[in-house]
Amino acid sequence: MAAEEKLSAAELSKKFENFFKDYHLIGVRRDKKSYYDLTIDDLKAYPYCIYGLFVNRVMDGDFTQAEACMPLAEENSVPRLGMELAYPKTSLSRFKEILEYLQEKQTPVHSLVLTAGRPSVLNGLYDFTRIAPYMERDKARFIHYMEYIYEKPLCPAIYDLAIAEYYYQQDRLFDAGKLVTQIITQFDTDCQRRLLFAALCLQSKIMFANGKGLMAENYVKNIQRFERKDGVQEFSFNIKAAETLVALYAADYEKVNKWMQDDAPDEFRDFNMLDLFRYMVKMRCYLLNEKYTALIALAEKLRPFIEAGWRGMDLCELDMLLAISFYRTGEKELAFSALERSLRIAKNRNFMRLIADEGEAVMPVLTDFIKNRGENAFLVKVVELARDMAITYPNYLRPPFRGRTRFTKEEIQLLKLLELGKTKEEIADYFLISLNTVNYHLKKLYLRMGVNSSHQAIGKARFIGVL
Figure 1 (cartoon, rainbow, N blue to C red):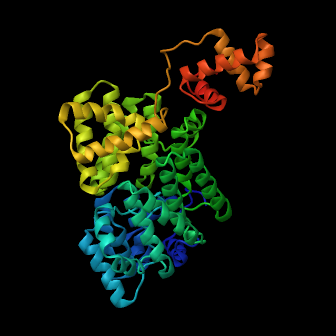
Figure 2 (cartoon, helix red, strand yellow; figure 1 turned 135 degrees about the vertical axis):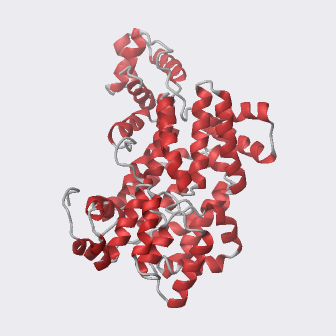
Figure 3 (cartoon, helix red, strand yellow; figure 1 turned 90 degrees about the vertical axis):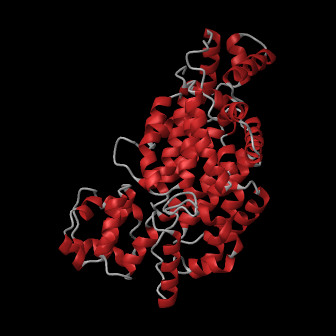
């Protein structure tokens, strides 16, 4: 349905009868204008429309207006409780109180989507990263609470996924990998693709951390298979962003460039809190492109929304990316201040890998920070993990040498022949040289470009405008 087609309150309410079966968050967002045009009388007559209006307010990052929607719904009604559970600023004590009430009344709210399309359970629509240690200590209670949000048979697996994400951040890779491998098949159901997306994304992170980056690319193919089977769901707009994150580690500049041109979110158009994961990927692409001013502007646009939504993990990531950007532009004090803010959250919540996974990009600012500000046990561990990633993925977020290295005529011709799909033997014939000489020149060219294959060389050459 076209975005400009206005729906009545009755039509919007009818869609909620089978919410999240045929009417996903994408549909709610598509009908945004219709919700915003509803009157108070419309909302009183069709209470479920209040929830749709509320969801759009949250997605806009307009938490004041979102909170104002709640009193419009009857107290302790399903729409009212659903809104409170989905509201990012609901206190954890109130969250628990609502779940206990639902338990007492035997009234589950299975329409709630805590992942909200993001590749995380702990850091989905609601930021649960702060309670992960408590979840680990009281498994039975938390699984029981989940039964009033998700279908009961899936709750143990959802709990395990949340704990696996927590283990991953602690660098307990074996424990995390064991859990996520066991639960992936349990999420292969028509109504839980969003959870499968989160599980597959975590699996890819574990593979990268273990130095198996090439194997991690397969997870994107699995997600795309489910999208083709089920059609568009609320995680679909994040699939290409997840694929681009993989491409950044693989130094696949062509794929990165294509995503930036065709699918990256536009921060100057309709803002959506559900795009936070995509915005974080875009900031990394800005680092690769050396567009530091654009990164800083985007970060400062996101900050008020992230702070207002009490999103600790996103704030930690935001300041870390800012620190890298400031450091690369020579603003050391700004870099150290941003990194200090990021480390404060990371240490408090044990987010080792959140920072360490930036490897080559974050290592210079980390090591210089230690020289100037001192070290502690947590920081030393983060540096150790970041060093491993930097050695394994040396080209991750390393800016191309645009404007700093000139190519010879022969090197450009060599790249063009590679682009045309010529074999090494054919290239040798073109230049009237031996195959060994071709291999020698290719090795030198790859070393200068910071790539490991002809595919990467072509992609990087296109990315920096040589081809």
